[in-house]
Length: 259
Image (cartoon, rainbow, N blue to C red; front, side):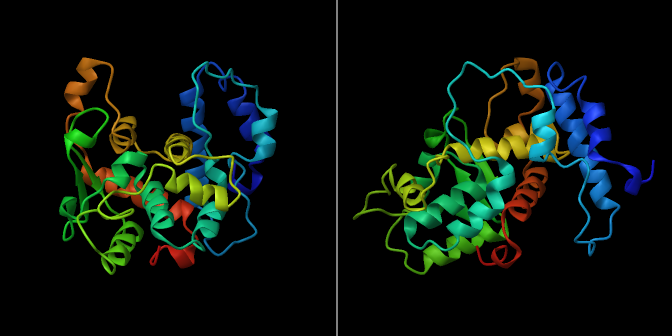
């Protein structure tokens, strides 16, 4: 079939038999079809609608997947992230900047709130977080995109201590600071930690980045020791491409260079 012949109903018929039982395979198949089609369409064709896009119509038609019994932090669907970031871009103040930085790096709240200037490698655009502040108690290095670097440069203009996002005095911002930003935006459908889930779902469903790269970006530890032995490297450059794709996806064009 040529691209103009492909309809969302064709994608539905393809995914329906595997959507529930082979969840990850179905997600990857849909994401890769969407990518292949997008790469073969005129970039100036603004009227084109990708038939493999996971629209609300397609999601509603596909079989319901059973929900996990685990409790999850409220998280925005990744399809809502660009509109959310445009709205967040109107907010000023340290807490709003820290939330933008958290979203762009897919980090945990305490990792961002306790970030130090000494951890930033400016020339290489890398943020080194010591094991003492990581959930898995292992050093973690994060490749920084230009929008993330722009936030750091902005915060450096008013630097007044070791902390990148200082609170009152020498203390870091409160854990409630980011939630307060969301509350002021009237966003009760998300939490700061929930943006990691938004990132993870987007990376799984919309990209071809390997599992190991996605898991490394989230600083997850492999349960399988054999797998972990092969995944010790932090894959910085591969993760840099992943984080750049994330920034490009969630940021309106006018905010990509200035954060």
